[in-house]
Each structure stands twice: as structure tokens, then as C-alpha cells.
Amino acid sequence: MTPFLPLQKPARLAAALALASALVAAHPAQARTAEIDPQFETFVPGDTPNQDRVDYSIWTDAMQNLVVSMGPSLREGAGRPDPSFGTRRQYGHVSRYRLEGTRVMFSFFDDAVRESFTEYRRDLEETANKIDIQALSRNEQLAYWINLHNVAIVEQISQNWPLRQPRELKVDGVPLDDAKFITVEGVNLSPRDIREKIVYQNWKDPLVIYGFWRGEIGGPSIQKEAFDAVNVGRLLERGARDFVNSLRGTEKSGSRLDVSTLYQEAAPFYFPDFENDVRAHIAQYADAEVKDILANTSTIRASITEYDIADLAGGIREPSLVPVETLGAGFQSTRIPQSMARLLRQREQKFLKILREGRTGTVTFSNISLPGDPEDKGEIE
Image 1 (cartoon, rainbow, N blue to C red):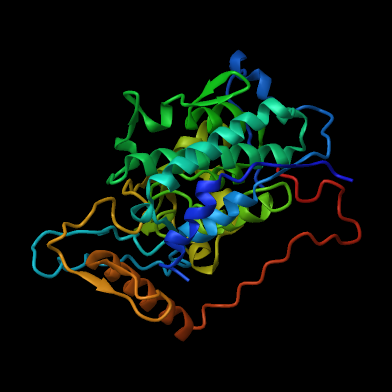
Image 2 (image 1 turned 180 degrees about the vertical axis):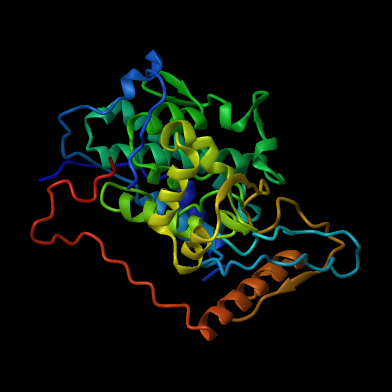
């Protein structure tokens, strides 16, 4: 029997999940960076993996209740919305990418929810003191690092919300991405360390870049389920297809293909021959429209960014003088600010358009073994 190592479910998080649920019913690298930093050598995956498993079900429970999907990209930039009624000031999201990706409902968190994220992040850190993380299967290790990274980002943003852009957030005076507030096996780590010093150094497949959530609209989506050894490949591929085929990932500008600066950041690890490698990578996950863009562009520029927070409220609380609205069916008469109601109406209109145009019907097969499949099928290299 496979050893099963459940993480203790923080009581406060379990009790608070209902608060927000009322709102919304491989291209191998050709070159690697230099030698691994000695302080991170302890995290190099071992050669003889065991069959231990870690249970992340509490994180799945949280994400199912706290994350809102904006649906697949229609590759149509959203226009600038009108100001809120009764004021000339623009509240809420104005980004042309605001109807892409996923959103975390930070504005609905109370102190108990915020504290629960800290408890859970510490739970994950403590797990590494109870089991040998490096002895787990590669997929299990990868899931651990992605989940820990994303839990930590959600935790810090929730503690500092309202916040327009996560990159403005500082932890003890250090920008969030470089703040070493995570401790695993006695090593102090930043979110960037987890990505670049551990995962990017030890996993060859650039698919891993789509697992890490930055809290920004312009980055990969946060998934509505935790990563684990079984689903990590499926979730990463889902994230890749979502991102590659969205405007925040790729866009045509004359004869040039504009891509997210995310690819430039990962270039030292996965795209040393930047233009050729990025094109080959994107082609693996591109739909018909993006494949046509690839065929009709001759150069690449990493220029697409959007740093606004990936939440529903735009990182700001509307003042009490601004009217709130009451949503009906499916939202249990939840009263929310005008700007958020506007965004959710735009989301609903987008979904209706998807249905009218017949863009539905995605089928995903996973955990299926076929004759001739290798034993390590589904493992992320």
C-alpha cells in the first residue's frame, strides 16, 4: 500500500470557505544555467524515488471556493469600462486582459481566512521535516514546490490586500518575489528561489513555468485544484494551452509575434535560442489561430505584461458612497460593489458568446494507460 501523508486541515480555513463560495456557484532545453548554488543542492531530486504521497485536498477545497475562472480567451481585448455610477473615478479592473485567466476573491477574505493561509504554508514547510522531499517521485516533488509557492503568494497578497499590483508588495522591506519568508529544511527561500533555483534548475520541461502563480493578470492562471503527482502533467498542460492561446501570452503585431515577458524570464533555463525555442514551444500548445500567427510572423519580441492583481475587485475597496448591487440567481443575493458586478456581467456575456459560437466541448483524458506506454508516462522531466 502506498504510504499516504495527509496534511492537517486548518480549522479556520475549513470554517471560512463558505464565506466566498456564495459569490460564484515537451521541448527540451538546449542549455542550462551554471552550476547549482551550493545552498540549494539539498533540493536536487534523488535517484531512487519512493512511492510516498502528500495529500493536498485542503488546498483543492480552498481553490474550488475562492477562485473564479474567467473562461477561455476569445483573443479579443476588453474595452475600457465606463466609470462607476455617481462618480468619474474608475474603480475595478480596466485591463484589456481582465476577461482572461482566473481570479482570487481576496476582497471576501476575513482575518480567519488570512491566518489559515499562513498556517497552511507552515504546514507545508513542516512536511519537509517529516518526510524526505527529495526521495519522492519527481512529479510528487514538483507538485510540492508549485503548491508551496502558490500558497505563499496567496498568503502574502491576502495579508496586504487591498493592493493594485503584487510587485508593489514588500515583506520586511524586500519585494515579494525576492523575500525569503519561506523555510524548507532550514533553508530560507523566496518565491523566485523556488522557481529558478529549485524547479527550473532540476526540471527540463518548460511546461513547469505555467504552474507558478504570480498574483498578476498577465501571468499563468492559478488552478482550481491542487497539484499532485497524478494531475501535475495535466494541469500544467492546461495552464500552457490557456496561456499560449490568450492575448496575455501571444499577440500579432504586423509581421512580429509579441509574447509575454514570462518567456524572456525563463529564457536562460529553457529558451537559449530565444526566437526558435519559443516558437517551437508555443507551437506545441497553440490552437489554429495562434498557429496561423506563428506562420505569418517573422520575428519575436517579449513585450506583453500586465501587473494588475488577479482578483475580482481590482485591488481596491470601493468607498461606501458608491452603490452596491445585488446579484440574483446563482449568487444567493450577494451584495457586491458596482465594479465587481460589472466585471461579472461581462464574464457572463463572454460565456454566452462562447455558447452561441459553439466554442465548447473540451474533453480531457488522464490516467489512462495504453499498450506500449512507457512506465514513466506522465512524468514531467
